Length: 86
Image (tube, rainbow, N blue to C red; front, top):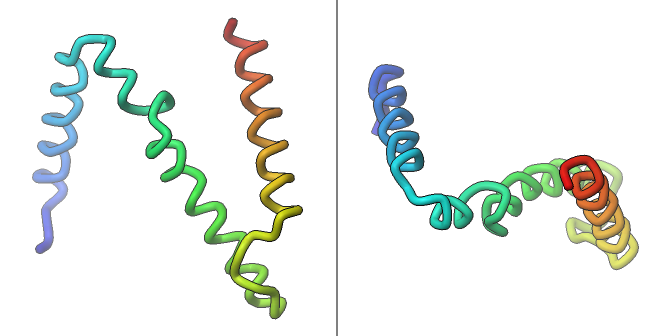
C-alpha cells in the first residue's frame, strides 16, 4: 500500500498530538528512555558495519572484541551526556 505525502504528514501530526497529550511519566516509555528506540538507532549502524566487513570476507557477526569496543563507546557517550546534562 502506498501513501501520499499528505497522508504521511497527517499520520505524523496525529502521532505527535498523541505524544503531547500523554502524561510525562508515560512519555519516558518512548524515545531515549526506551531500549527498543535506542536499538533501532544502532541496529542500522551495526548492519552497515557488518556489510562492509562482508566485503572483506569477514563473518557477518560481531566478535567479542567488537562488542566490547561497542560497549566502551556507548559507555563513553553516556558518560559525556551525564556530564553535559546533569
